[in-house]
Length: 260
Image (cartoon, rainbow, N blue to C red; front, side):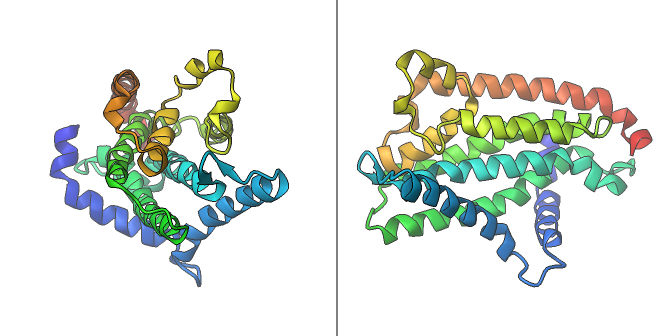
């Protein structure tokens, strides 16, 4: 499968760009809507917590910077999971073609979401500069954490996109799980308010590693290799989920054409 993805990289990029354009083809404002929703979400949370709850800063960092840094990987993760899950349904006309490598379709959706994520990261960089917080070399490791997010979503996408072909209610279930996952991940709240005995449980969530990694890159200035055990756990979990996901995909793949 890795070999197929490498050989088909040009096709993946072309389909991803077309998929990105197709989402907003019929609207007057076009791709503006791709960035409007995340930015408005950040502003809503900022208003609720900073204006409503009087949260002025987290440590020495303005709350808006701390919040936007945690929400950025979450936006990509939730959008990529939701889009990749419907990759076989959205491209059903390609799935029914015998000669087409349908294994690239979930990755096409992920790359399409990645295009928005890259622009949003640039927005965060501009936001930091506007607040007078210059970035350091530590910020370069955000590339690593973006790769971690892509790997995590990919490890889930083949299983979810295969099952939803036969069980359409999975969309609603995943939506509920995503809501729980967001609030169980220290994205809009500081982990320091949690008793130390519960932090270990929170760290079992792979998104904790990514969200904390973004804040390490922009705020805490900690290198990813300083979290050795967490890094090993994260990648072992991703590899295990990817193996299970691929097995599920290969088992269900012969029956896709009958269900679509």
